[in-house]
Image (cartoon, rainbow, N blue to C red; front, top):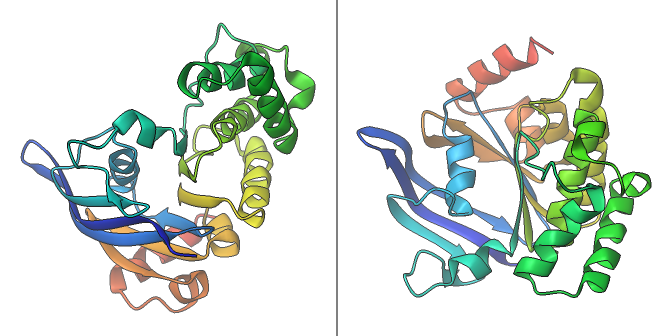
Length: 246
């Protein structure tokens, strides 16, 4: 196994607003870590700091033993090692499904179009979207768009997949199809860091659950410990409130 991401004393402020405070945790190779917590607890900001969409205010992010915040570190090369799936899909509307999964490989990884198509088809098959390669995003449902977004990220063959509330923009009936794909990825051994409000998914699929509250990690542990026997009052309150809405 071994740590693939190691976060040490990470902080992030926007002006006077300290959004992340002294965050310490790591992700092992092949591990699925789910981050839960209320809106505004810092979950998405943490993910955006990890892939450097936001620059941390302090602390360290160690990726495979190297500090990625070191000025000499190649940020662009680092980002190719992380697959990012957003809430809002972020597909290229003027490209069809296949092209969405090919363009990044050709431009960033410098793969030939033939190889990129082959890789794209492999992952579109994984997410069950290989029948839709000629469709434009506007012709797809939300669940289908998100599955294409997952295939696009996988096509870069990253070391870690980052998911930022990947089902929050979907109609309820489409949530299941995306969670099924994510569960299959987890079972295949893909390293995953998932910000989610889907408690059932976190309970069933995660190796470890991290509960964030007001910019700090309030508690972390195995799903059965967090959901069945949380040690912190904040965690108990959050779960009582959240699980009662399901």
